[in-house]
Image 1 (cartoon, rainbow, N blue to C red):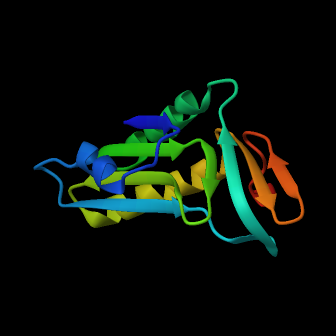
Image 2: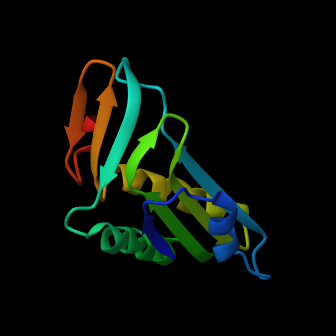
Length: 141
């Protein structure tokens, strides 16, 4: 399940979409907007999908994960719009019969999201802002 939405994310509802009776675990990652980035005080972060390609990019990541690990299901929910400090911007849930596969698959998914940022990102600080294009190199986010 891939979701791009401007509405607040509910980790519980994302988890519910991957749970099944053959799963021994669900490993979940919850990404939050932090109050500091590169030493600058963050006021907000804005994510946009102007070319509407984020869903397809996230689906490619999910498909890669399914091929690499024995997981039952994966869900990636990414919030767009202006998010304030403390709000959830990303929820990844990976269901598997065994925890090792789920942890590894979840870590890989987070890393791929960061490397392939599917949306544009604009961080607003107290005195300036920084924009990152979709798929900006990992060191630039």
